[in-house]
Length: 393
Image 1 (cartoon, helix red, strand yellow):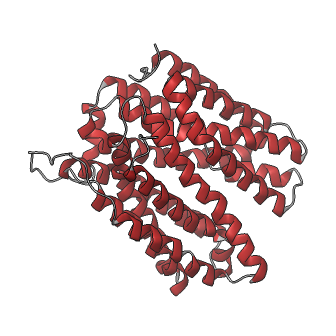
Image 2: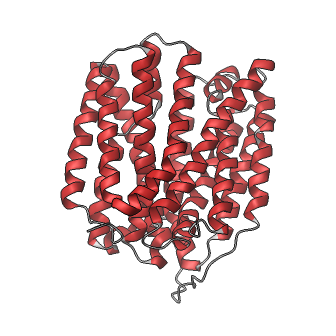
Image 3: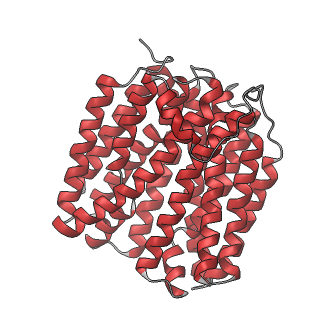
């Protein structure tokens, strides 16, 4: 498999290790924050600021990476900040310090995302984008399987030892930092224009980008507005009467399906066309949210989370491969960074909207509206979005 180059392997293992560190803490983060005095409101504000930090910085640092013609310094710094944010959470428990630690973690994600995805794109051809991004997503998501499993195992033997878990999460983070020093930049040259890149200068790319980019990303962002946090799905499962262990179990099962399916679906997308596989992913998403309007047994939710894993595998990496195939190589960091930046902001709005609909009208209405909006986006993309150049005609 020549398309899985040395750089693709290194980036994939870095993402796996970083996700192990992050997902070790995901199940216990709300519990830990409440144990040190955070209210639900304060937790919401904390996560909102953290996601806004990541969202706004993705576009800026993606453009800065294109401007300087460098990828690896941004990748290395981004993963370093995320790794060091883990023990920071355990050192002190003052609210301001916790806010700083979470902001550092999300800033690290913002710094690395555009440059990392551009580096992956540079390693692929038009005909192998799906499998390269799919393989990376597969390795990344495997960390979301291993991480929570390690956390549950640790807390089984050492109940409520939350702060020590944050310190343990630093170990895979350090391994990821070490691997990042084996990365090398490609042949991309810095821009001749020496004008400084302002923090919001990436927003100009939207106006200057190809029409096909705006058509595609516009549809993707509308979908993001109805794609709320997975917490709502888990909450629905919990309300249906499943135990805490079963609820965490279906989340791990979803990530396992996602990790296993991402690479083969990436290969399939290269053969059949990125657009076709992505739209099938949207239809699977609509089936899951439509199915959530029905209360069933754990078998039913197991089936829905199986389909949800297939949806994620058919869309997450493929959307970035699609974008990179319709933009210029020297703009890849900006194009993906702009999209993921807006995506982070839309995700926050989506969760707020779904939460309000749930509170005001109940989960059935919230999930039904999401289903209908997703079907509308699938119809729009099938008609208006450009066919990637590697698709089978």
